[in-house]
Length: 171
Ligand code: OFO
Image 1 (cartoon, rainbow, N blue to C red):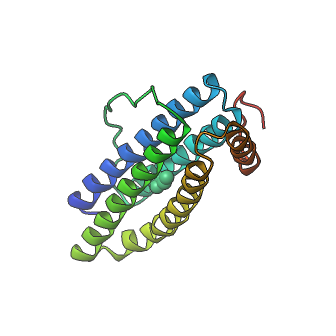
Image 2 (cartoon, rainbow, N blue to C red):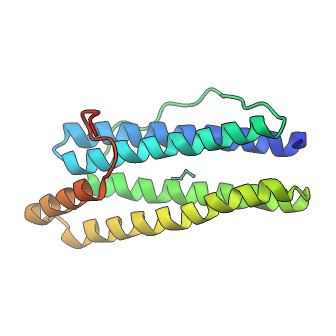
């Protein structure tokens, strides 16, 4: 059985993961209507992944005798100035999520809730991978600058990196 403090903290993390999913969905939409189909596909897929992260915590809270809560949330940003702007915001959002997961892990240590701590290990590793991936993409975007051919190439690369659901919902 999880204690109330941990349950609330996990429920707040559920909200953050759900918000991440909506934020990336909003970014995918912007990319799709702004001529970046590869980036759109990549972000649609990432939005799905965040939804799975949310569900993972929902199931965990319920299985441990708590109850998952779905809180109201603010609207995600929907206008971006460039692909550089999009991925700068993706990276800083992932850094925010990493910090949140780390604080959550710290709380499990304080509360001696080792089962939740073990559960969070997966998220700690996932955050490291995601931050690295987003940093690599951002570095590439910075490198090409205003070069249109370079940007076209990056968009293609993002398309190739996407393995899941495409922008039109097909596999
Ligand atoms: Fe982007 O990662 Fe969830 O946790």
